[in-house]
Length: 562
Image 1 (tube, rainbow, N blue to C red):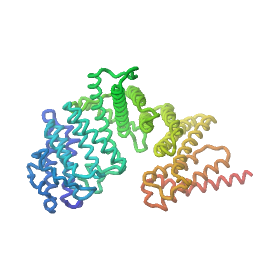
Image 2 (image 1 turned 90 degrees about the horizontal axis):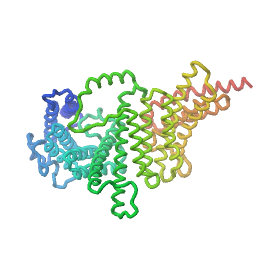
Image 3 (image 1 turned 30 degrees about the vertical axis):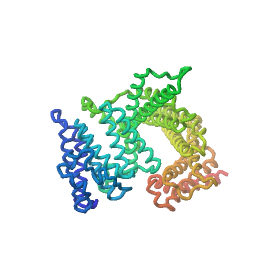
Image 4 (image 1 turned 180 degrees about the horizontal axis):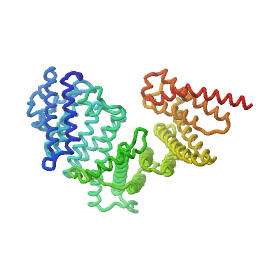
């Protein structure tokens, strides 16, 4: 394959970017009498890319004989599902890991995928299926790795959608469940966000960040679960139609088969409810991202611009592939609350601990997303209080030995939630201070929230200790940022406690200084950690310089008063 820095390769990357832009942006402006104009142009560019990929391989002596049988004109539109589909077709040769051969095959598979989606979107379903099948055949020759797993899931999702549109529910279910299993196995064995398929055709400086890869991979899996939910819903409807509605309670003389069927349907209904919850959560989070400013608050100007843009395009509704349900915010949350209860009816705490807690976490995330859109700070604070009421009893109840990772998640989220409540109370208190002195009740409430947040951050940090009670000298990658952020937040929280007694102030400031020092000293000892906490490190370094001066002044005040 040509060097990723060569002019030829950059030309291919530019072509791919053009094809994506035509598909995702330009196609929205296509006239009614030529609705697929941009997508047809994108298709031609994708064909050119495929031919270029083959030419590169041939020039390097890497092309396989079975691939060489494809002429340029037949490279992407003349293949049959059982024909030459790349390196080995049905010949059984496999490529492993992230080898150059595996990357070449993945790139060809990606082009087949995008061509398949292109044909489906232009209502040429048979041709679309053919390309998607070519894509999966190429991927079947590869061992699953961070290089190709995202493409594998996307391809199965598209085949699932295609077959569901033909009312072939069983076939659709097979593809979607394969995508689901692939995701679960990958996350268990690898865990790190994989390469996105668009990165096959980008230069290194344009590769996605870790965060963006995570978001795209999770979105692909969310689509898998969403489409599976629709498939299960259809299956449940068919079964219910054939056998009658299954009662929620078992009749006295229910057979074992009937009981199993009722349990399966209850679980499928609960799964569907969970998928809808995640779907609604993603909608809210995407809306939040569109409307927030650089400090995470609602941007009124941006909101107005989007409102104006929406008025101009509200008549343009896509009906060819999907339908959407539009709710008002209150109706949305009422619907979601109902879905959560349905999900928890089956996934009870006794027997389904992990599932039950995940449902609660999704519910908490919904409150957090909705709080962003709430102008009334007091109501926003109450939303966060609901999150605390959901999670704190569970966190305290869980066995630390068997559910360590889940408890860490809950502790960190509780700490952040109390911290958000504290910031809101501080904002309200500052507004109040404009007209009157801050009362003792407000101070007590503020200190309670501050101490609660610090407590859960410290519980999280304590969970990192070894069985011998020692903190790790080197933090593992998955807890590096959370641990350093927790230290930084604890330092900030001790510095914010309102204490009338100078000795208490000194004690809190020294605790604050110790935690700021931990962040700076850890990053000095492990420079590679600095990139994970750039902002927190910079602020910690400033505080390590400034706090001793404040502490010295307080001590001097104490001495002079005595």
